[in-house]
Length: 392
Ligand SMILES: [Zn+2]
Ligand SMILES: [Zn+2]
Image (cartoon, rainbow, N blue to C red; front, side, top):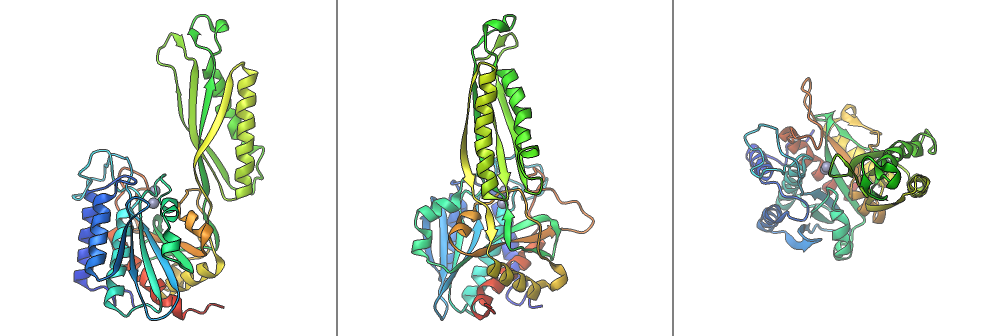
């Protein structure tokens, strides 16, 4: 175990202080200007080549090693529009926004790796450290790609890491194939005809249409999808009406659809469109669904997943590596990178034994700083191990 070999106590204290400072100053998607400034400043101070402003507020730091070839290590920087209830001393100073997904920890871990890599020993080739904006619903990874990320920084493989509060601290999770779901958000608009609450026969009330649809939509998963294929459809918003004696003219329903298979996703989208139009028409209303914010499947390449697992085993021992870790129905915009380059998206445990961990996106969440040296150790293992790996 060479876990702390590249991270002395002072360096670790510095990373914890940095992580807590980022936690106290969360920034929402594509507004990560302070965070990006800190990242760029630290990378420049280490003597790295720094490229800022990619995909809005994205930052890339480059470490050139001896030989040919390049890989990409990615952290996300954005926070969420949630009012923090953690009660910690370093809680958000900004009402209504907080680091509830631990991206503050992701930034600290990758900066810790940057520091150790800059001091040496250098990796066998080039390592691009990517700090991306807008992971939370903003497809920041895609924005960086559209801004030329993979042209400016050509890589043979890409790696991502997310903290995981149901996995014990000191443990890692990895799997080949799907690790996170393909996801898409939907908005259903039902247009009826408004009228007096006491004269429903003179109106086309969109509310019972919407209620019928909320129930009917679930049959797409329960009756139209192979029970062995994972799919979830959640209605999360239902907005209609503004008075208790007026029938509204329209209703809006919004939610999300997730699958672990692109074909299942396509069939469910078609099924939704048919159901929304058909059920609405049967009630004399007009309904249509629009889809937006699609995230692809986050699917790990077998060879890179194997290399990631080997790196983990070297770091924490075979008993602390969950392989294959079960896939999740959450979504991740790292999938946009994995669509274009082989790579692996891994999970790092943050759960303390005997202490319930708040879930990701919970208002009580706070990243577990005890994971920082492990995350740094993982990144160093990937960066330094890539060029000496057994690629068989
Ligand atoms: Zn999140
Ligand atoms: Zn996250």
